[in-house]
Amino acid sequence: MASNLVVARGGVEFVPPISLAFWRWTLVFLILLPFTYITLKKNFKTIKKEYKKLFFLGSMGCGVCGAFPFLAGETTTVTNMGIIYTSSPVFIILISYFFFHENINFTKIIGLIVCLIGVFTIIIKGDLNLLISLQFTIGDLWMLAAAIGWALYSIYLFYWNSELKIFERFTLISFFGALSLLPFYIGEEIFYKQTAFIPEFYFWVIFAAISPGIIAFTLYTFAQKKIRCIFNGFHSLCFYSLWSDLWLFFI
Image 1 (spheres, helix red, strand yellow):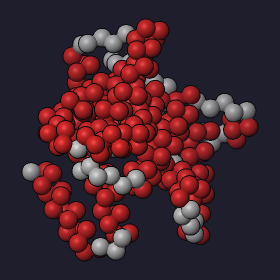
Image 2 (spheres, rainbow, N blue to C red):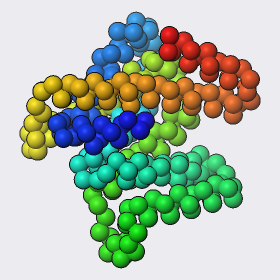
Image 3 (cartoon, rainbow, N blue to C red):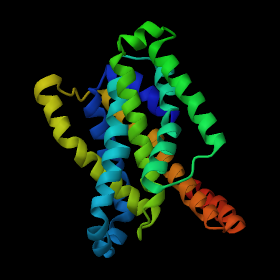
Image 4 (cartoon, rainbow, N blue to C red):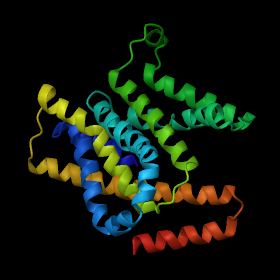
């Protein structure tokens, strides 16, 4: 996941931010589709039933979390982005509490307070006057919004059960993510900056699609799947299955 922040700082020097996000997830979809097309075709009724949830996951995980860090990368540092991104657990706890009625124990409260203090210290750069005058760096705010988007993606990925397998669902999430970015990509091309299809463009899009895209998102989804199993009480079976899945994945 950390490599996504490297893309956010390095890639935006050569590719407009929304263009980078759009082409990244379009490429992820095109890479995965040949491996999942047959099963997706067989599960068309399931897709028709779940497409709204898939679109939400795509727009949060690939749209908001795909474009906002790249927008942030134009005006803030990798260090700032990394630390602010750690505020996601704060929003995960709060959203889980208000929407899914999860209990917030004392340990979670302490962790939430410490995380919030750290995030705001980075945003205001240790200057309380900056907080009072609300003179936030635009890149820091983009990153904070991305953290909220990632929290929403994580929570609903965890709670929304799907009849589709991991790679099938991820193929559709990447498709809907690219689709959610399409109108903004077109607007960026017309009103802001056109994409130059130079060698650097292909390098950063391919790297973003493979490392923080396919590899990171797949492993994160595997982890969520196993945590859900643990919550359901199948501890040893799930851990054994996790290592089996990872071994097969890397093969």
